[in-house]
Length: 369
Image (cartoon, rainbow, N blue to C red; front, side):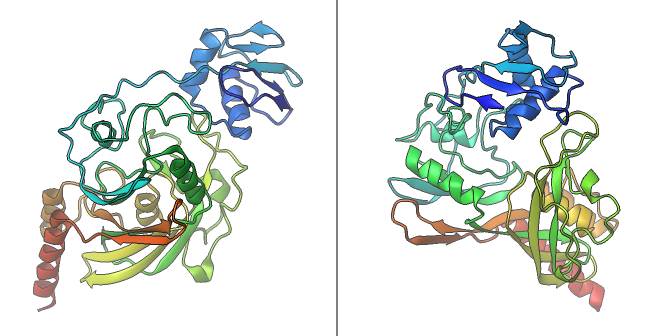
């Protein structure tokens, strides 16, 4: 493979190998770009194909065409569409720390981090754009979506509360991204889970669910037949050590990646629930929610995607009143990119989780009498 990695639509050139997925051009291009470190969505690739920006042996081709081994694929990436995000000073951003390089916020549950389908406004990004020092920037090849998500280097799900760092300048953004990639960020979450959890380390592959596109799963094909995958340290599986494999179940998805979550029991609430701390070595989408539900068989209380209504009516009522997954990012720490000093913040449980916890404690006390 030879390629030109500069921005601005300069062509990338690939020679198709026998081991590449060749049944459809669009899937092939997604695979080739990801292998080259230029991960791109299939929808974007299909737009490029329709615009004639992808050639096979010098000729335009359809997205559905099969590609022969040895073919030359030329790709002229198109810059991302400009964001329509606008400043919204009405978005309340609870800032716990700020300096000239970054800020740390305590995100409330219900706040979406960046605009997406169904959430075009009222997001954290809309609020950031109303603050001094934040503005929509031109596309940057090192941060392809940075012009859409200014300063965002990681995110929390809408229903998850807690600490989130936002970069205020380009060097800080790149430094924080590198620290996340090298797993040098301290992150710990508190969760209330349904059932009796245990101390464990879950070390698995993690990727899109093959049939439900809203969900992720740790039961990837590479885990097949590994009965010890993702169990406690004593039976730790080495599944997921490599990022090279791909699951071809269903539609082509992002390659499965290793996910590691350490779970520590903080408080037992009878047999109905457990309070746990979850620390991350990796930060995959829905990672904690997936590991607790699939591997621990103790889904997070109130999780609408990975959990089920608790069997006990009293516990079910508590989950319904909470109205979201009981997950809170309570610790965030790293080496400050500018000062080189260690920085660390802690966040107490928000009021809704404290109320649910108090109710579960009273329920556990009554059950033990």
